[in-house]
Image (cartoon, rainbow, N blue to C red; front, top):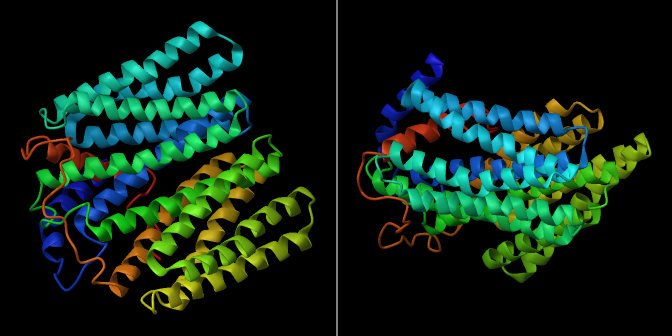
Length: 438
């Protein structure tokens, strides 16, 4: 714990010098403000994924539900350690008391619904959507000296919790299309929240962030690619699990993947035009999405030869898609690096799936965390290549900092938020420490 605290404080002392190292040689997606936005996006979106699968797997009585809930509990412990390293033991215990209720009631509500216990279900729902947002919102407001308004924090927390409930309720009703539509909506919301929160922190600490902003065109591009890449990983791993289990909602996960592919295609089209977007879709679907499904089918049939063929298709995809990305960026993303980056992602997907098949569920979700985090590295690398390729497109800066409604220009509480999230990044699954570099 002392080592973690020392690392955190050392990083804080380095922030001004790191910021000063930024140059004005051209637009970039890699600024102190954009880095903070990306880190918060990763933490919040991963949190949302775990909450939703905790509830649905608890309801189903899935074999891996214990591992999922243990991952949620580890996350809560990491959060407590981060708070304690900055705010002291008393503050950490107060935080733990509030936050533990969320992690207990998330699977608790699912269990109550499963058992037909309406009273317990209503109590858990009330706690999650009303009491928890209010208590944690007040805590954050008090901890930041009022710089994070309690009503704003409460509103954001309540909207997130409602997204989780809506996914679960649709799943229970067997309305799987709605469940995955809502999942995508809730996942998207976490990126809105991270933009607003990081904007408030940066506004309050302009010098620490070298007067960079979270809402430049380059930062927005990086965030969009982070969202598309990480959502793809989440849906791909979930689709392979559902396929292996031959679950009723399998077709709707694949439908969600198709919707997500369409969004990815639209993003490519907005940058490179329709012809490139069509080329992307052909490459993306043929030896990628389809090949992952072939991996599942081969595994179910215990057909090693077909499994090898499917993996060869994925290797072909990494070569072809890497070439596509390099050519699209005019070599700003070198071809060899692009190919390696894509294949490392495919390895993460396969490893997560194989752990699941072997019923090593603890390793499944450790692998998931690693692969999910890696997609943010992919988003960073690709966005930076595009920005360097098209400096005129991404040179425009907002005329002023965004009005997020999450704080003031006071410094009092912002330091607490900044330090908390730096500590969280160090402690909650290797956001900064274990992320692969593409």
